[in-house]
Length: 246
Image (cartoon, rainbow, N blue to C red):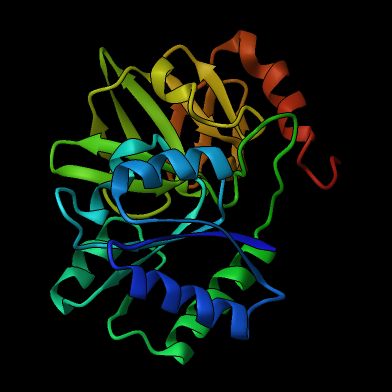
């Protein structure tokens, strides 16, 4: 069951969403909480660990868009509810899984939930040894242009530069963030990320070649340094997810 929280300052809207979910998706969704403001929503999310949150954007005092500011890691889907179409770009840009315009249409709500549920069922990796879900969880990255949300499996490598670091994504330009590589490393699952050098952390799923002679790791066209002492531990780490070794 997809544990779900509904957040809207209008009771009628909360009840409408709940009714639609219970009527059409009673075997898919379990509503574990409802609230009318962002502060209590944050507490509810931390307590109930939902997989899905319906979040109203326009609420008294705070915008629902601010929900991402309260979490370092986003391991739940957020669908924003709004009466104003102009918020759509902001919602998607922040990493929302969708948005629904008021008045809420049952078919649109049901289709959105089914799409999210299918995505969660087909995610490639389940959490192990206390790791957060690599295939689904996201990292909130504050950078010079604002806030960027990056899925764990989109991160190829992270390179240190003093008290800053550069995050190389699967595509697009690197992100420069005012965090040490150590503080970023703490947020990532050890089963998929490995510190190959004091200045470099890599996602082992992107490794295409290890050059022992030059002490270089290639992740496609991207090259990263490899400390000689880390060669054997890296091979052992990669072997845990490799299908075979010849």
